[in-house]
Image (tube, rainbow, N blue to C red; front, side, top):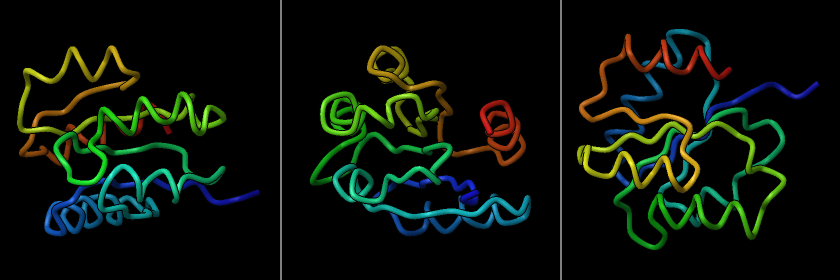
Length: 119
């Protein structure tokens, strides 16, 4: 069986690195993507959860969630936790398929608790 992984989608390399550090401490393997388009290309059956930023160039988080439904519907059941500095985006992201929402800056304990609910 393939090993489960978390797909981290954020255009900020520092944010991706911080999320990687948090997840590695719990032995959670990751895949990184710089935007929604990159993330669509990296989706595979081994991805068991997505951590998704909203504001990114090329393809933002909302466009990514819309695209999963049309381009890769076989992955539409993967839990998506949106990470954003803008809490006003919470309702919109949930309406487009996000499973959960965490406001940045991310609290590591809160993040790990939410991830453990879905993995």
